[in-house]
Length: 66
Image 1 (cartoon, rainbow, N blue to C red):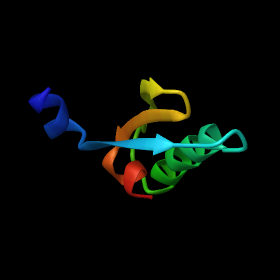
Image 2 (image 1 turned 180 degrees about the horizontal axis):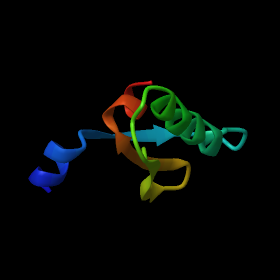
Image 3 (image 1 turned 45 degrees about the horizontal axis):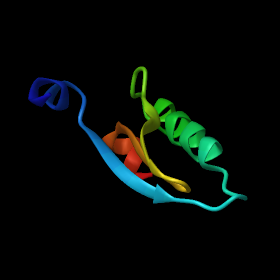
C-alpha cells in the first residue's frame, strides 16, 4: 500500500449525498480535470459503500482536491 501511494499519491473522502446528487458526474469531472493537467490514467471512483446515501470515493490526489 505504501509503494502504491509513493507511485501515485491519492486520497479518499466520505461523501454524503441526496437523491438528486450528481456524484457520478462529479467523479467524471474530477478525472477529466486530472487529464487536463497531464496525469496519465487518473482514477476517481467509489471505494466503499458505508450506508445509504454515504459512499467513500478514492482517486488521485489532484482529482480529490479539485
